[in-house]
Image: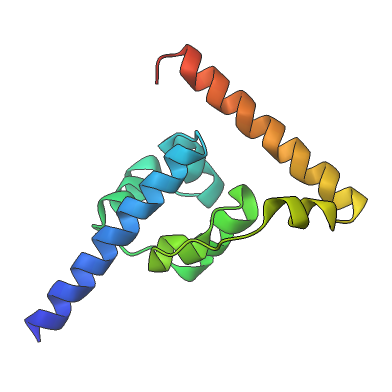
Length: 117
């Protein structure tokens, strides 16, 4: 029985590591993500450290708010897409939204680089 518990703990810790990695890839602070989830930063840190399991509801919020790849967070596998084909075939409104998100992402990266993070 403890073997299953050990596997669950290891799985949870790995999910937390991936959650942290994807947050950093998106140039977000723990406070940013905690605010979007409606939780305190301490609780969010528990998710990243693997000390607490993140719910499906919270994962859904991450996907909707930040377009986090939930499949990657849960399984460690990233979805491979042909970005050129994806963008070319988007309806205009989705294309505009996509590029607005990309512009915000680039600005966050530039701001964090200037701060030395």
